[in-house]
Length: 196
Image 1 (tube, one colour):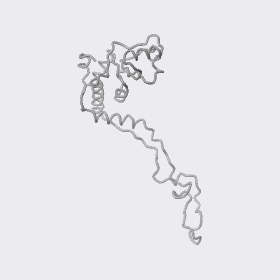
Image 2: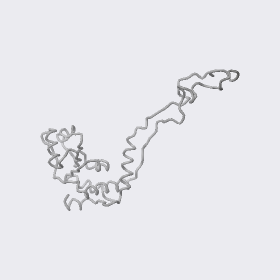
Image 3: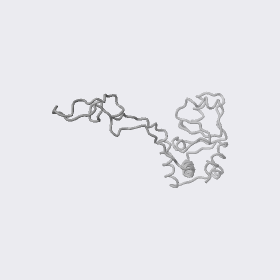
Image 4: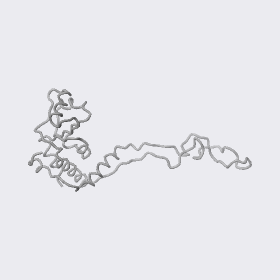
């Protein structure tokens, strides 16, 4: 990445912001969890309300309902219930994490600049060839202001790569891919997103 591009994007280097990155990635992953695990309590299982046998005189332990948790087919005590795993991260932490993630990738030399990225013929083979020419492999994140329909068509079937607009790219995506390719049109948007 050239010096002008680095100057345009305010970045954080070193260990500053590493906790913010951790918090944000943890929140992303937690927010993807469905939290739909569910068990039935003793009041929800299918069972009669009748007393299994009389209270006294049988020699057996007293029992009130067959839905008791200690009976086979009974309810579950303290089992999982539907819940939300969502975590909230404030705006300043999000900005710090984005700056730190982008800064670490620039510092490691994993960010490349191109004037533009487009696959005019819309062919997957051409798209893969472009990735290998730019980054030497398919696991690449390409960030631009926008992509045309033919480029999206060419890249939609290449699993290891991702086309993402500069407005929507997030910290987890910046850290996941082997190389990050930025177009000139993405720089002003990324610079705005990294400002304090």
